[in-house]
Length: 277
Image (cartoon, rainbow, N blue to C red; front, top):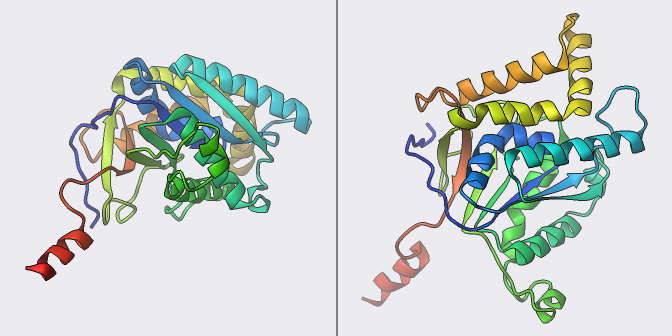
């Protein structure tokens, strides 16, 4: 069984970097926690890899991109985020983009913002139909390995030395974690109480009107029902928060597969120390 913890999430004090294919992904999976961090005075920087040109009803790609980007900015402002950076890669087509190119972009952002904490999609959960979530999550986990100043030495020469975060939060965008999904090895499952900011999270998701309309149209087509985008989004966010908090006996929560520094000496150092005795 997964090792799970019901202890409160301990926040570091430094900046936060969020890596996500779309604004909808990170707000759905971590919007409440990020809002709490922003309210504590932490600078939350969001890097959106996709251009979000496909999530709409009856709009062309350019119109869709502009609408989704503008609505994402409004949602970010509602949650108190410091900045949203849209990299503009074509949504739904990130399999055609070099992972090295995206990793280099992340390493550049790490050096610029020097985050204490990084959030990104959990690509280990085996349920995602969205390949962009898989690509961004996998790349984001690999990027910190390039935190040395020996990587991207042109940036080092420009005065941006290597940097890496101390905490990493894998988030599940659209459903709660299941047993044996995370919390293994050096990771631990963390639940964050978002009861106090749930209404703001719902409001931020409702700002994403263009993407929400596309989602509602798909749900209605597949179910044969007629449900408004606002009703669908509100019910979804509230149910997701309730189910994510169930294990920790919280009314509304977000759950993360969490990595942070461990105390003590690394195993390979202890092994050499024992050999020398």
